[in-house]
Length: 110
Image (cartoon, one colour):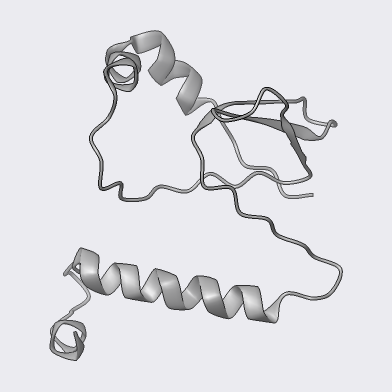
């Protein structure tokens, strides 16, 4: 992996292998440096929707629960999935209305 890292230039892209190692390190480092007043809970699930207004807590609806999770901050991140999308997910991607709704999602930090 060091060979791959040393071969990177300002105009090249890291391989998935290098990027994955960096993101794992970064996440572990950030989690270790959080203050006692900050808590983070990871949910390895599929998010169906996020609701809540500008001045309201965000409600995160997961595929495995009928009860939403209340969050002060929701951070949307891209990632690599090692699975193919379901038929329903593929249909949503082709639906222009879904793309428009997805484009309107913003991240708010209070």
